View 1 (cartoon, one colour):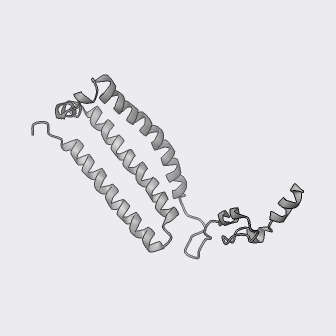
View 2 (cartoon, one colour):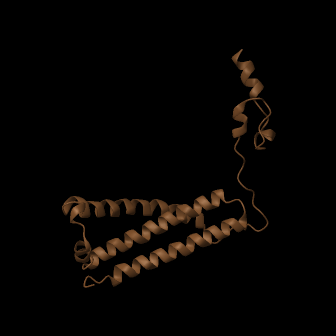
View 3 (cartoon, helix red, strand yellow):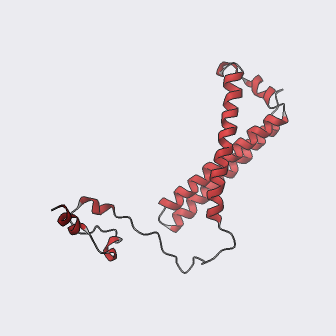
Length: 163
């Protein structure tokens, strides 16, 4: 009896990826996954570098480095120096007087922004269906990323505690 039911639901692979349901009456048929977009004439077969593979690798490596940087940042600023109540303008001025802490915070800023922007780029690629929408969203993302990284870098290196 159980085999009769499952055999009725088996659909030839020709119909499995239509995205329009399988017509078996099963509500789960609406969740058939469509195949990935096919290559178009504009898509080159081979490229000199595999950008997506490098972006994937960057996400993994920057994530590991960011965990160390952020946990170190929290440990120094909150746990060892007396908690959040001790963080003030003078605390930041004293910390950024050292090139080590300037580099630490700069690396944390750059990696966090690039890591987050790369993740957003992936989301845009996944969900923006029109090429023009994808182009504008990624352009806006690029401009805001560059602006934030440049502004943060400027603040870290031009910070004047004598204001």
